[in-house]
Length: 189
Image (cartoon, rainbow, N blue to C red; front, side, top):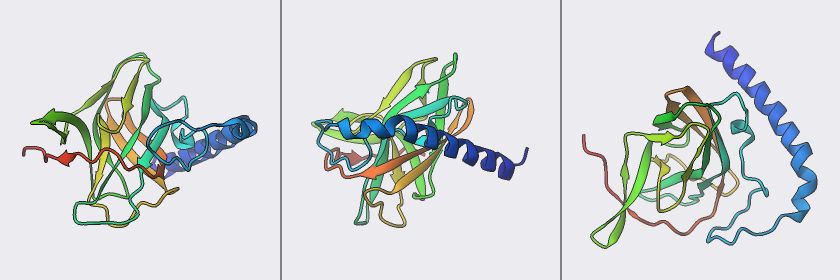
């Protein structure tokens, strides 16, 4: 099957999942409350991306979001956060990421070094069989670097993961977040 056909089938599947979620979750939206974190969440009560909720995908993103960055500077970077759920009975290893909003995307961890928190690349992230792995500020995340344009609140940001189970597409809304201002330590070549 060609990539074009697969993308069209994938797009149709995403539309069907999005429609089903809208019908199922829509009536509950009026009951949603705040989540009590330091961010300003302007997304819907469920930030799970319709593009990443298909049971056919080996990994799905729950409560996914991306740090909005409405003004770019020399070191402009953003990141994707959320809970990755492995829908298979085998571990899934993530080895790379890419995004159309970034010239470069990396898998990152945050570590305490000499009294400060530092972000640095990691070679892989393993999501256990049938388990979850949380991507969160101040910890592991998908770093979006070399941004050619701002990421505004409400923008839908897509990321493609390269995994041991194949390519996985994730999409999440951008929202305001003022925390996690760690320094960056580039990977060693």
